[in-house]
Amino acid sequence: MIYYLSLGSNIGNRKDNLRKAVSFLRSIGNIKKISSVYETTPVLMSSEAANFYNLVICMKIELVPDVLLSNIKRFEESMGRDIKNSHNLSRKIDIDILLAEDLVLNEHNLIIPHKEMVNRAFILIPLNEIAPGLKHPVSSKTVRDLLKRLKTDETIIKIKDLCLY
Image (cartoon, rainbow, N blue to C red; front, side, top):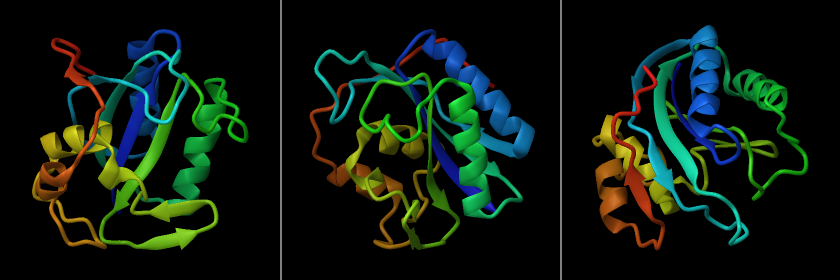
């Protein structure tokens, strides 16, 4: 299955944290595309929270979504994330499943497409970089169109010369 995943880090060595996450993802699937890294202001977090480094990955993984999610959560915990108590808190790594082909899923622990992706520049800008014509399976709008309609006060800066390939 083709997945689009969002990765973010705002504690410690953000670049190294993302590299470890990319390495983990390579160990469970085949990465097709990786966006540039963007430094972004935190959304719905304390004003003291540090900026994130964010990117989006497209990859082929032979796991069903709930098994992929379990693998992701185990990796996040191995990086020190408190899965139960870290929503809207700073973290070394955060990996979200954005899309899984044209799948629409609404379970208590997993919603695909990611319910906030259409409202987040830190997701749509890197996603637009690697898949501008990709259609959202619910709205049928392309990523490019979703980004054009986005109203946000997020600050997004592309980090030059930072490659995680």
